[in-house]
Image 1 (cartoon, rainbow over the protein chains, first blue to last red):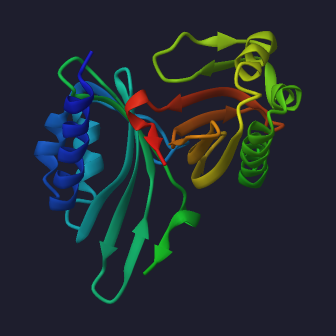
Image 2: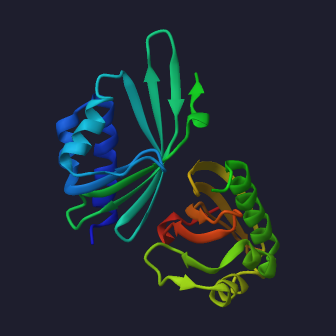
Image 3: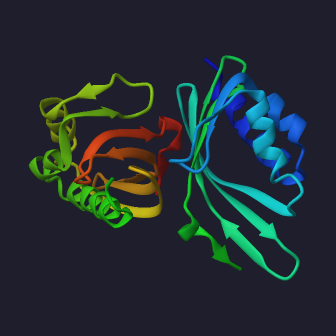
Length: 123
Length: 123
């Protein structure tokens, strides 16, 4: 079981790397057979190649991330966070609630993101 | 699939009934074979009798509830909410992130609450 501190560190690393568009480093936060469901209801992606493709698609967007609230139980975390997208002449914000499970080394074994298009706000 | 509006209504009813300590009405929000894991990592409770016992144990505590953020995807919702407990000479607050799944009638099929004792704040 990973410690709450190790889980929190992985989540913070994830959000920092996401803002940077550091796809390879994000992939390395995931276990090799990890799954992604983002948003909830979308097809479930599995494995490093699928994880890499998912983050490559958004790596060049200019964006900021911020962790708002995190709750940890066992080898899982739920966290509310802000993703601000800067398209030059417009800024939008999505604030998903994401749920992750972790392996013993606090690598991400699964990620599920709760948000919908109706949650997107123009700043 | 329940509508987002129906899911939101169930969540709001749940928090209102929880504040009132209206155990029977809370039980009726759940499907007959529903599960509860609260907090994450605790034994999973299953079925109306177990659900009733869970809420009976806390029904007499004086408390307030407030929905802070809710995100809905498919037949699931994740929401951040505040539970304020008033013990007369002290007030404490826990702000869990809960994840629920719903059946077609927007009844709660499962509830999982992310929080830990370290999240309890004295007001």
